[in-house]
Image (cartoon, rainbow, N blue to C red; front, side):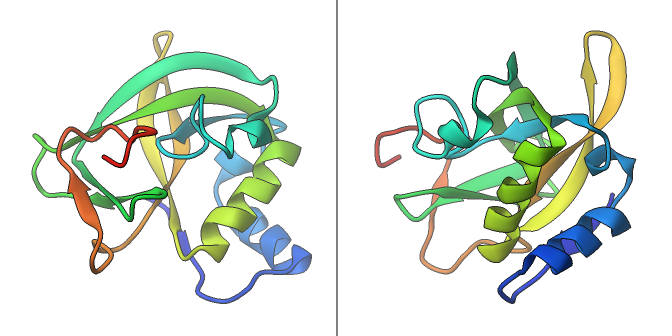
Length: 149
């Protein structure tokens, strides 16, 4: 699994360096992204995705989801019964650049997960946190909603 992390404010050159050092998943002109929080349909950051192709929902085992009441974070879990829900989109690389800036700037890590989509295995970027943020509430069903979970 490939992970990227930063704790400082990012500028355009640093984002470019991060993308160049990542695998070819984020270097393609079109890519698939897994969205589990405010990038999903019906949330305020979904506008960043524009009219990109929606592939549907996906349940992902081995992660726990937490929220501060405004947005979620996911953390890798040793328990495969822990599950989160997200949506898959095909986006242009130029759409991904501001998303990666937003997520890494908010202290998330970028990891790549293996998924199967239409019978084809592929790596997809997701944004995680290393550990559960202090004071955040566990979302037991792994689904971030517009309600205060």
